[in-house]
Amino acid sequence: MSVSVNEWIAQRIKPDQISRYLREDGSDFIDEQQIEADLASGQHASAEYIREIMAKSLRIETLTPRETAALLHVQDPQLIREMEQTAAAIKKKVYDNRIVTFAPLYLSSKCVNGCKYCSFSTENGEMERRIVPMDELRREVQTLAGEIGHKRLIVVYGEHPDSDVDYIVDTVREVYDCVFKTRKGVGQIRRVNINAAPMSIEDLRKLKEVGIGTFQVFQETYHKKTYTEVHPAHTLKGNYDWRLYSMHRAFDAGIDDVGIGALFGLYDWRFEVMGLIYHTHELEQRYGVGPHTISFPRLEPAHNAPLATDSAYLVGDDDFKHAVLTLRLAVPYTGMILTAREDADLRRKILPMGITQTDASTKIGLGAYSRKHKEQESSRQQFVIGDSRSLDEVVREMAQQGYITSFCTAGYRCGRTGTKIMDLLKCGFEGQFCKLNAIITYREWLDDFASDETREIAEPLIRKEIEEVRLTNPKMFPTLEDYYQRTCDGARDLYF
Ligand code: SAM
Ligand code: SF4
Image (tube, rainbow, N blue to C red):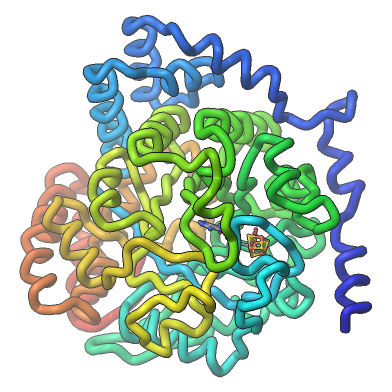
């Protein structure tokens, strides 16, 4: 077995699928000296300049690295408040009061890498190693789609021959095929996003064919020295540029819906934000499309991975909020994902800063949804999460705050991806479809899964949303009324 694992490892990285993207001098697009210079230049920005930058964000234009660096150094509490207001205004303009929800689904704890912050590292001899077989996968999806009511998943895999692209394709297909009877209709996962190791263009084409939603790879840290320290050089993940160009390969494989991210806590948080901005610019310039989502996971404690708690760069709550705010302003059109790594209290505070997606009823142990254990099992999962509230509780709380939870998955099924969705988002037009789809999918979920308590709080909100469509979108209103009535009568998956 170990020989075949080694053979598999030896064939994974395709050097020509890195070199083709490098600059003529062999360098990549993360120029650390330039980032340091940007950061230094941002230190003494005037209040007037900061306000000009905020006005640009409000026009839904991507900020330059220098502008981003200036925001990263704002300290004046009044300007911070203005940044928060601008972030909320951008969110309202592009995504209105909708928050999309999803659940992570971990399918493999086998991994050939040795990331120093992760429990799945090969160095951790106490981790239970396995991949989830198909019958257990169906039980997991039954709990998620048939009992909790999720419509979107992010499916997460370790890097290992047993969970290679063929396993990923089989599991995605299986997830899409599962349909369960609910109170009034049926429950089904309609969008499977993937978080997996970097792949070759050939493998990525297979993911495109099976119909994945977003392809997500986090660079973890954009700082090269730190990257080398936390990802041993002899491992696959030790190759910085193979990872850095994951999204380029995805675009070249026809996947135009990609998610980038950095793991905050490995290196200076301001540097990581700059890395994400340079990554965004590179994708915009080369492919005409920026990232569909940006994630900002923060290091959480992980079994037998001391770096997760000992790192010299752990990010405190205030700096974390500042990073999120800056990202919201710097890439105004992108989806921003806040995960259950953070506890409920912080999530409540950060949500209004322009978050568009969040997970709920989260469990990250393999098979944990169908096992229905209440407690987290640290020796069976990648790290420890901070918020394990149920989807029902999260939907209810968001309704109390005026947010409608959207279970919409229409965009990619209608071909609204890549440049098409970017253009629609930038001019605010995508919102028209999203609002309608949010209403329909909220209705579905309330009828199929919500507790009485949640329904009671959500009904006035959904009525308010419908009234807004009547007033602002009279052309579409009759169709909405028709779809809404049919959904109340038990029809499912009607979308715009
Ligand atoms: N194995 C693949 C990889 O590393 O790209 C797939 C996903 S990995 C299971 C998912 C993500 O979890 C990683 O990209 C990393 O950012 C994050 N992660 C790893 N250890 C973590 C920790 N201790 N706390 C928070 N997030 C962590
Ligand atoms: Fe493996 Fe991903 Fe964990 Fe690294 S972060 S050890 S690649 S599962």
